[in-house]
Image (cartoon, rainbow, N blue to C red):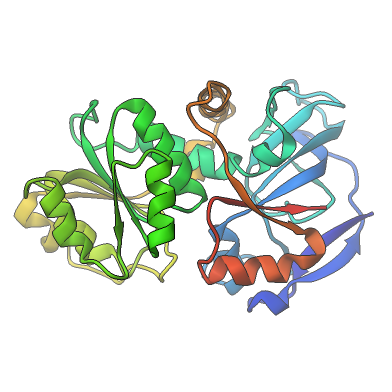
Length: 326
């Protein structure tokens, strides 16, 4: 048995209930993992509210770290007793233990702690596929200017550091002066408080009117139109979240004046194969082990206080990574 957070229907934080459920044995291609730490992400809110629909009842959570307790037939990259971490579908990490597909579970290096791993797998792999794989025409070179919204969040703080390590000039936006200072302290070249400043005007000023090559946007509805204005000709709009609500339908003709590109990127298409997932995780592990990227665990909650954690996350009052502790 394992304490597990479930919802019976979409709703607010109060919809989440702590129940004791059997775990079972792994089948072919699966493992059973006992969690030491669990990652909290905004995608969990989308799933809880029904924006991303799932069959009910649903156990939330896409990210965790712990120890492998059992291995199913055909799993060769993990064994019982391995320290492991993952960002993976289907949801289910809000639990003391679970059975899950082994494909996206990666062996965790000994020098990376469980808390760090649980706070970095989904967020760090997201930063990896955006900065390393979701690129404008001609790619990115040292000195290029990019715009990153919500830069003081879990993904954003990793991206600020990683972009600096790659030599990019990252322009950060955030919702308070304190969050802007946090982004600057983690490698952003510029920071804009979008609640008190016109971020489009500031970006044009910073870039000498040229605009940026790429915008990485997890905010959605509130920043969409302004983000398109911030792009230079042939620029890329990389949308990867909807924290302010989904982007409304738009006519492709709005992209025509500057021949812009748009993508709605997701992590799970990038980690759909064992080879891709491991290569991306290796890249993430290396940059963390090098010290170029530090994972900031700013909020910790017991699993039993998951409702409080969601309320803080949904109010956009968190910075860095938030983890749940079983």
